[in-house]
Amino acid sequence: MRHYETDSASAAGRLLALCMVVDGNLAPAELRALQRSRLLEFIDIDIDTFHDLLSDLCHDMLSTSVKHEHVVLDIATIDALLGEIHAPELRRELLRAMWIIADADGVLADAEARLLARACAVWSAESRFVKQEAQELAQD
Image 1 (cartoon, one colour):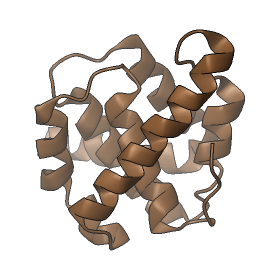
Image 2: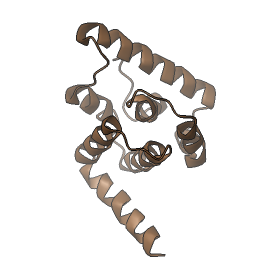
Image 3: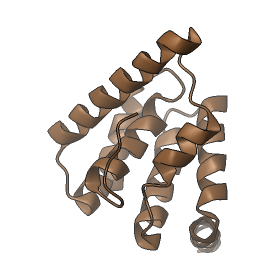
Image 4: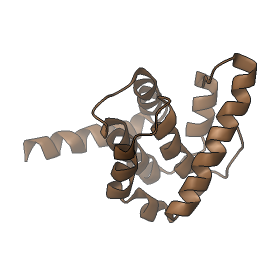
């Protein structure tokens, strides 16, 4: 996997792209959810740049599949991608958007669940705030 600067739009955009393709299927509902989340505006990238990041991610994933015979992202790789995001507010916004994207097609695939669980574990402090906000919204 290529490396992006810490807290960069590219690092954040790649995590959104990963959330969309980690289950092996890019659903149109996930793209609509991304647009509704307005996270691309938050990280200041346009849709064309996001598509480039998505393409680069798929290329990187396919290039590693030659070694593994199928596309596999191990925990170390996922942790490295998550580790490129340090800013607490960016982590919270990404985690919120990743949940929205993963849930957009009505199916939480095992690979999506693993990615989200790992993000919650690696970004534990920020995941607590996202959970609290979701509970507060549910009570309103």
